[in-house]
Amino acid sequence: MINFFLYAVFFFLICGLTFESLFIYYDYKRRLIHAGWFKSLAAFCFVLIGVSLFSDNLLYDCFYYWKLLICLGLFFGMLGDIFRAVCKVSTGTKSKLFNLAGTAAFITGHLLYITTWLTIENHILFPYLIILSVIAVPTIIFILKKGKRTSKGEKILGTVYLLIVISMFCVSFSEMLVTKASMAKQFALGSFFFMTSDIITIGNSIAHRPHKRLRALNLLNYYAGQILIAFCLLFDKIL
Image 1 (cartoon, rainbow, N blue to C red):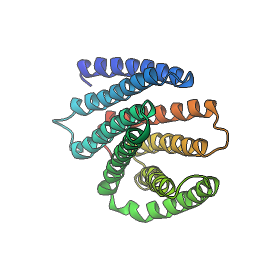
Image 2 (cartoon, rainbow, N blue to C red; image 1 turned 180 degrees about the horizontal axis):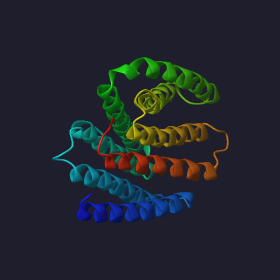
Image 3 (cartoon, rainbow, N blue to C red; image 1 turned 45 degrees about the vertical axis):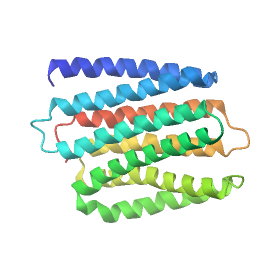
Image 4 (cartoon, rainbow, N blue to C red; image 1 turned 120 degrees about the horizontal axis):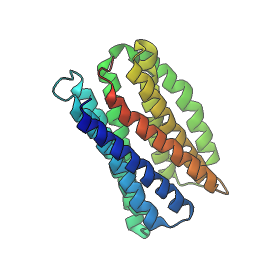
């Protein structure tokens, strides 16, 4: 890696971890405006890490198309973080619209990640569908049973979102099993943290008494996943 990109990645990583820590602190203290700013800045730093790693080997990387999809996934994840942060400090219709926009951005980013792996290796489709069924069906049934107080629209949106998040892990895990690729292993671990974070978030939101510590735990899982996925672009090859 060229020194310039190495220094840039290191700088953005330190900034991202700092902003992330401040976000978790202010979110725990329920100072939502401060939390929103630091959440957005942390997400932006992780996008910059992805862009720096992608740019380093841009001219010599035959997998640049798939790595571009991962960069775009990070970008839409950042948009989702920003929209959700604005949602927290808004009220009424604006809050609902920003929540929907954030969910749509996250779904778009996850679909880009899924597209990355499905278009690289066709042989993973069958194991992917099996693993998806084994993980998604019991998880979604459990969440729906626990979320009896939520509206029908929220249940549908939550089910679709959860299915896509689980699918993101399953497709990269299938790639890892089939090809044994190092990048697939790291991406699978990152997407596992993502999936765990969202399951905790949804489970905590429908609980009778949401736990603030679980909120901090799901944020740590989320950012661990974000960092691991961003650093997937460090690999010279995908397969």
